[in-house]
Image 1 (tube, rainbow, N blue to C red):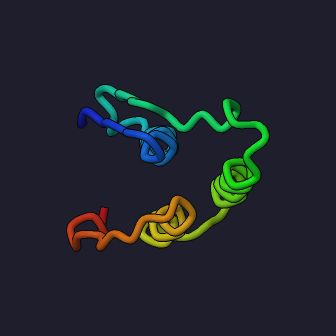
Image 2: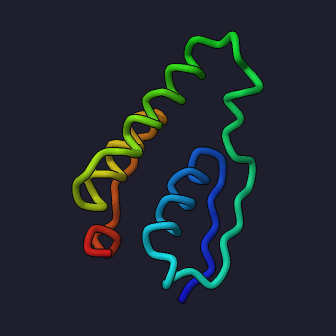
Image 3: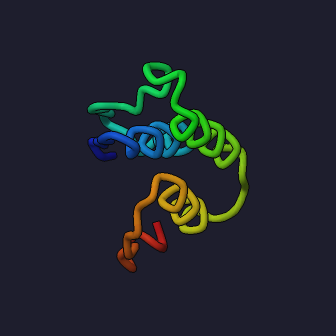
Length: 86
């Protein structure tokens, strides 16, 4: 059991991970979640929301999912080895 925290775009990943592994969640804290509905005229924000929704439905292992998610939100992060086997 662990306490989980998601910030900004990480809120989406934290919520999905918590839903998939609820038995591992002691608490879930969400800070500054993306608010795409606040920028309805932003084509970039709406495209990101569509891309994230489509990606949410993808299958594959956790590492592949995380890499895809990070690509959509424009982050280039090296995933530590211990997280690759999580």
